Image 1 (cartoon, rainbow, N blue to C red):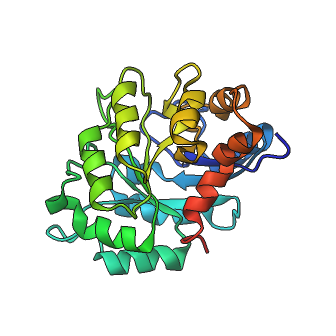
Image 2 (cartoon, rainbow, N blue to C red):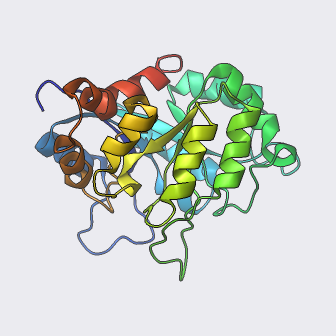
Length: 263
């Protein structure tokens, strides 16, 4: 893998609700795992933005990634407007640029909002204009939530992608197990839709998507610290696809999506 620039799109850094004694959570531990597995860079979200409130996590992830050129902060976002919890889109995007924030993640189920036009388009429109990559994750964190699978509302995701064809959308969740048919129809429907691989464990699935829709629709992700990088790396390394496609999935596709927003 020395010739690959592996770029992990899905890492959490910070104390989280499922943290156990001696559990992985720090940026030093993440960097050690990255060194061990040959991962060059990573997008990093703080669990506070995933579990508690985006504003709390967005502040803390800047501290977690400060002075760490291999770690790039990701912010969590909410619909703008009525609650005044988040700056208006222009100010929010300007703050992202100012702080070198690479992407945005939406957690519709965790924070009880919709991807419908009336709820999210005041934010999604400006993000599309700015070409900010938007990760969408429907899994929920909290008491009794457990490890969820097939959580994505694909109807809502497809509608969002169709309303904003310039918006790079990347779906991420804990596990895609029995929803492949609708995933594939969504890829058919939306050229701007991408899949982050930490949730996609289907045997020879990388080959299938690469053959049908192209490797540019796939983004490497580990789901660290809940899943180790070795899981996605093993699937990608052994995939029966061209080396150029492996390089694209390992890091090239994410580099391309971030090209217009990275400092």
